[in-house]
Length: 280
Image (cartoon, rainbow, N blue to C red; front, side, top):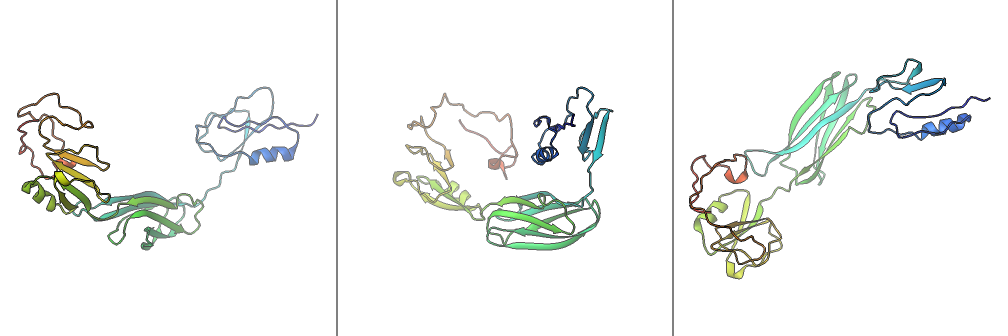
């Protein structure tokens, strides 16, 4: 009888029937694709001859009666291993891009670029030795915002999928904030001194939510309908007369502070121990 072949893979997800047709077997091999699973060797039965065609990566416990055919080929590869956009701590509207590249092959000349959505671009050329890393921080002060793309081009680079990475740069403008108040000079002054805030002021009687506002602050007032933008309500007197706010369960006089979250934005620049709450 003619010899028959059966094609199976080590993902456990694909198995084809036996066939004596060489062309059909080759067609089935062409239909195999990589899978993100832990590889395992297929269960063997009978006295069939078994050949394992593999690059030899991530596969253990191969039976002793299996003939292995290695197709492993070493290839040069330069890859982006980290890319991130971060704000500069000393400036509310300044951002930097951190880029890390690693060379997994022979020494290579690498051309890197950082591009913005409005065609802003930073380019640089570096030479990386084998197993060397390149790390640098790029100033994005001339970038307007939106998608940021990092890309590399290297000599003899075998893998293109790790040559591009993306991050997002927030639009660098002040936060348009509406303060609704009957008059609060201390709060108004505090918000005007914040360099990240563009402040607009309105009174409670004339309140209408503007469409072009990023955030709202209500001073001793709450609107009848919940705002569509992020909002902060300060010092609402008595029981709220709006349905979208929960009714208070009581009043606590001079509550003790049992936990101090230094990482919360509202606690920035406030010395620990210098906050007291009259009632809540």
